[in-house]
Image (cartoon, rainbow, N blue to C red; front, side, top):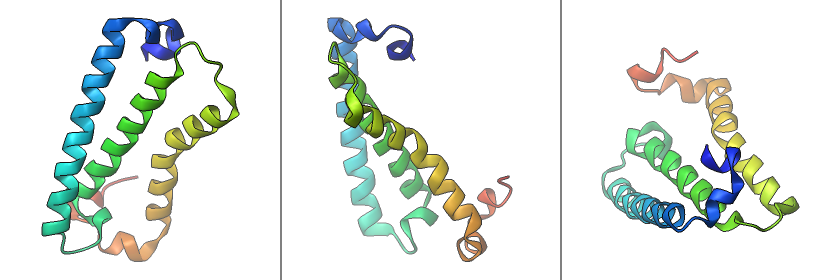
Length: 115
């Protein structure tokens, strides 16, 4: 949020340190979740709560790295495209899963009340 309101905040050493710390924590937790899923997954990763959490964590990590690397550089077409893909990925994946009736049948009970 701060980056969208004030892009120059990425030059602040405190923001960079917190961003790096957050990214490292996300990467370490992603490694743990991936390891857990490799050992314990019985169904598709999307059907496992940890798999969905891992997907969200990877999106957050990519977004933090993108914000961290922007700084004073011009946004450029590649970065803008990457930002749009990262932003739209959860919506597109949810839509795919929602439209696919075979996947919906095997959803956990707490996910069946989704829109």
